[in-house]
Image (tube, rainbow, N blue to C red; front, side):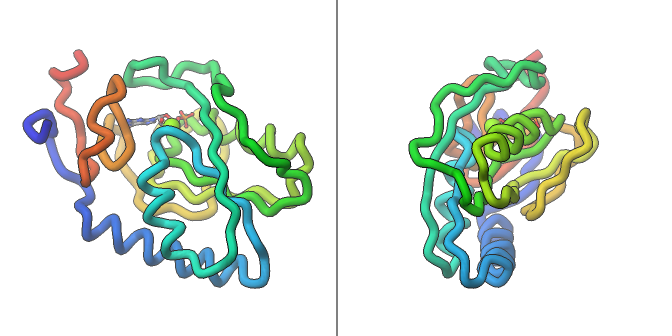
Length: 178
Ligand code: 5GP
Ligand code: MG
């Protein structure tokens, strides 16, 4: 698996530091509140596991599954809701946890859905932010790392459902998918 990686971008130590940094900010910003942490499957599950342990607040944890990629390396413009959230988001302060924001379409879809359902507030903590990929003007409130416009895998992020278990994030060699 490691041989398929062109370049390691963020190792375990750097990722841990990002979780600590954002966890502290979220703890301060949401002081006195009980946010509903909404983890976007499958990509954000490791980020969720690490980040919520750095948040010193009562939180509810929920999952939602959407799909945008259909197995390739570029976003399709069509977002599908695959598995819906199990609890009512009405009047809740929802904190979406994403693996990466690229075009922004997934995030827009989720924010619209939660707002339509009456969430009191919706914020986003993304592990990675690929700002160059944006097609929609939308930003995350908390960003672990900015990444350049390359296809990355590891730490939850996949190519064809593989590489999610790499403990670091790296750029996938182009010959793997071309
Ligand atoms: P968006 O809707 O912002 O274009 O895409 C967001 C989703 O696309 C992410 O949640 C992620 O699943 C996928 N994605 C975008 N860029 C990458 C990337 O570089 N690597 C991987 N593995 N997935 C990505
Ligand atoms: Mg995703």
